[in-house]
Amino acid sequence: MLDMKRMRFPIEGILVCIRWYAAYPLSYRHLEEMMVERGVLVDHSTIGRWASRSLPILDKLFHQHKRPVGSSWRMDETYIKVKGVWKYLYRAADKEGKTVDFLLTAKRDKAAALHFFEKAMRNNDVPDKVTMDKSGANKAAIHEINADKESPILVRQVSDVQFEPHVTLTDQISTLAR
Image 1: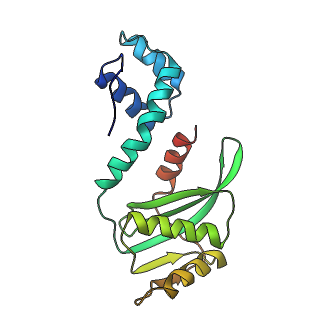
Image 2: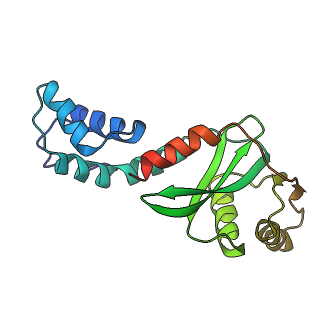
């Protein structure tokens, strides 16, 4: 749980800063200025400590209350620049467009795809069907997962997976990667 002992600031102010940092593309210095405008004198490094201490804990709490996703997933990977370094963004959404999970990796191979699927299935239920592009690494990862299952995951491969959450998920990633 969040340990707020020995905190000099009210919990409401701390949580407002953390929420703004997580929800909007703001730097610690922007948040420092915004808090000064509201009469709270806080240093940007203090906000950074609050964020690094509480965001992982809040992430675990929020995952516990996440609504279930559908059993048919659309999965793909794309290449994005994060802090000046190109990374692969693996992502999946269900039929209704709810984000299943995402993962940033340095490589696009079977091990990365397997790691993504294991993470997504650990945090959600196992899907009945996965629609993906024609990447051999993704298909190999699903085949390895299916080898251990009594009822295999149905795989549908298309030339290009299109789904709506691309823009919002990419925006979320760029916000987290600051």
